[in-house]
Image 1 (cartoon, rainbow, N blue to C red):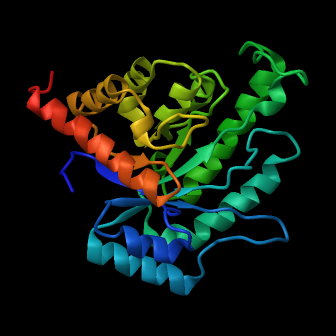
Image 2: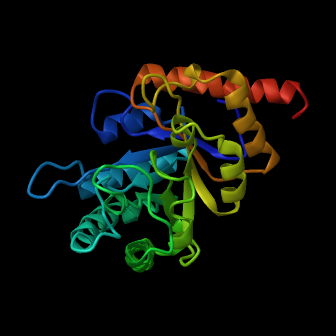
Length: 273
């Protein structure tokens, strides 16, 4: 594996098995594993029990691994009437994974209720309902930041079908970190470079994946110049966080890793230009 200034990682669902077999499979191939965890009310979940957490910690020590934890996707921290339930779910995931000392906890700030029922654009930031959502979201982030032993360990991710700066007014109020999902920006037709450049000083995690018929596909689907521009920026800015190849099968993982290594090698041969 090539050496980078950042930690190259991928998700905990690359082979068709549970989290622990995936981490064993990935040990030695990546430096970080994003634990994709879900918790369903009165239903199934994949939260690791204490014995599995202890084994994951031992694997991390042996193989110089870190973990990032993706909190459940259905959290609605800024939504009146749903924030309390979402906080209970988040706390449950955090409590069972804290012994792993994760590099970051990634979460979504879901603001879908701010859109009209017919969809369309989001209302302007000065609307009362938007300000109320921002206030609830900021309070929730302050609370969750304490649970993860410091707000800098909490990385808020940009979402597809949202304005790229949708969460910025909330982040201006709470000293949390950022998770820049480059694949989401590509999916929505945005040039990721200006957004990534502005966010990098607070970015603890970057998600990278290709776009074909949908996102979270192999990076081999991306034109080399687009991928190369992102790789170049990361090296120029000395990014030292985690970069996650956010794909979900073995073929996409291996081909994405090859595409990324090719882009990094081409950059090195070109003298970093």
